Image (tube, rainbow, N blue to C red):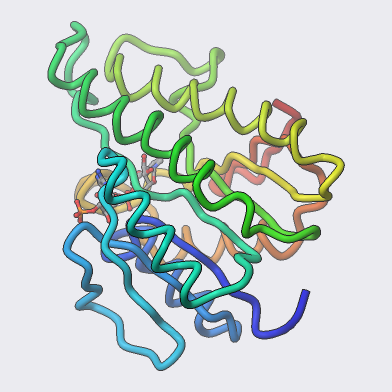
Length: 223
Ligand SMILES: NC(=O)c1ccc[n+]([C@@H]2O[C@H](COP(=O)([O-])OP(=O)(O)OC[C@H]3O[C@@H](n4cnc5c(N)ncnc54)[C@H](OP(=O)(O)O)[C@@H]3O)[C@@H](O)[C@H]2O)c1
């Protein structure tokens, strides 16, 4: 891969995605960050480019892909970070939560990845931001749509890792810790910058494709 490396992060306007964009820019990456508004107000850098993307919308995915191909010939690192957790305080499945959560966390993630995966070169990486709440050993009653959607993300991570083995592209699911963001809430112990530092460390050291990595505990295992 030629320097500067290009990273593509979905949901880079806030929380973990924003903090990770800052870390990658600090490491010399060129960062293409997406947001639903088309702006990233909290960060300004000559190597930061922002594109509009709503992962629930197929036309938005296609327009974003076209814009990416106009500005980059390859994406060395794709971070599928955009996500919602509408029902973490609920135990009974609700249709509206399921529809929004699955169209964002699953259908959106999968079809955005499929739109841009052809731009990821051999040696490139795909990171799917998941959660330990989706592990079968951690399942509890709350957040049915959220847990099940991220379980699907873990399965897609493993399937994509298998598909991309010959191309030598590494695919990893990462639990970022419990992080103080809009999604994680005010009580979360980890600041976005600390979580992003852990994600960056995994990106820079990850060797095995198809793994689940936990930023908070350092534990990792094959999916
Ligand atoms: N915080 C935690 O404790 C925690 C724990 C485990 C996993 N995670 C995962 O970490 C990721 C980032 O979450 P966060 O904590 O940083 O939350 P956050 O601050 O709420 O950020 C979520 C990001 O996703 C974007 N997004 C939501 N729906 C979207 C859509 N339809 N299309 C495109 N972008 C969309 C948001 O954009 P808007 O600003 O426009 O809404 C925002 O940029 C998520 O996948 C989440 O599940 C977080």
